[in-house]
Length: 267
Image 1 (cartoon, rainbow, N blue to C red):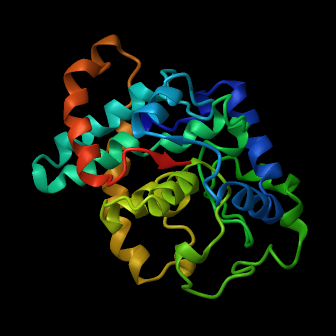
Image 2: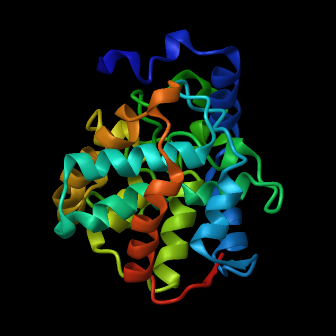
Image 3: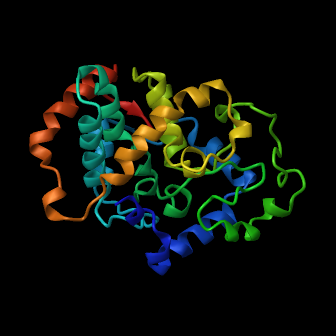
């Protein structure tokens, strides 16, 4: 039943508080500061599996659907991707599901960022905040909401400039995209678009911000929406739905070797 997912009326107070804090503080200035901080990828050198071990310790405070650590969610998502699109020609889609949330290493103590600024839904900054964004009312607290440079429909952007030219609120989507791009990951462009925009729910589920999208965004929207089916609807806290890691790990080890030319990545 799809209406049992992303049902924020049944969430704990901490989820609403999470989005209140995020919407209030994710400004253009903040996003630019964080990009400057993390774009050099000079914080750590580690493998995909070492990053995976770090997210084993993280439970996403913004998620109303599951209270398991992120490694469980990764396997649930990737196995749902395999079920939806079986076959070797779609192994890139399987691996995308497996690694899609590795950017959440940012909120591991070793990186030290607050979950408020690393997880949750994403949205553009530098233009009007769309009403389809969850807990939209809390953008009233964001300084950019009252800045005439940023509070119009287009804000600082040109029509159909393309999402790659739009500043999104800073978080794990942008970070992992940047890590993969700068470490010469061989996944196809569709996978990069999924990684970068899978948390942009107001776009891929509600059709918001189409005026910022270009042909590339429209072309890859299909795959982002297909991925969302696996990312969202695979979530389960039931013990029988927890994947057997030892059985599944060899398959993803093979895919990592196929799509990553280097064992160690810069983060």
